[in-house]
Image (cartoon, rainbow, N blue to C red; front, side, top):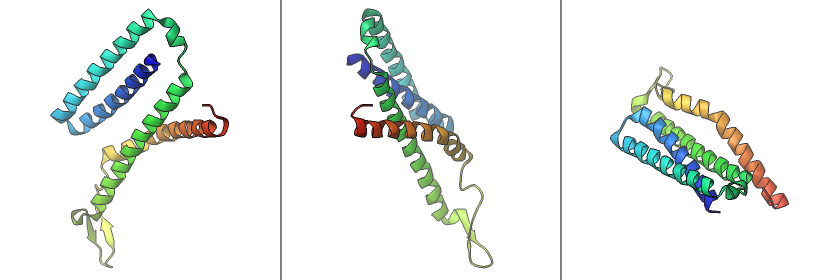
Length: 152
């Protein structure tokens, strides 16, 4: 059970590390750099603990329920991607309501200016969609399996 907790902690830390790297490339703030260093340190330390544990007790590694680990990981990553998508859509919607990002044409209709959707937002939404759909389908299918048959 302890090794399962370490694996899940490692996966959560690794996912957070990837998100922080993406946001650091976009913003380049000092706070994100320190968060990047913190997640790099936590990934290294948890990986080291898992390696030492695996060398000392290899039988415990064989008893890990990999379906459970993958199901929890898929749900976590799907939730993170959903929050990311909601955040981007909210930003875009707020920009459409800001008067500096639109004007009215001759007929009195609102016309949105170019640049409401940033390139990185568009690419993030577009490229993350297949991963979100695949992980979401896996998570929901296993959840339905759990409710219907009592196992993952």
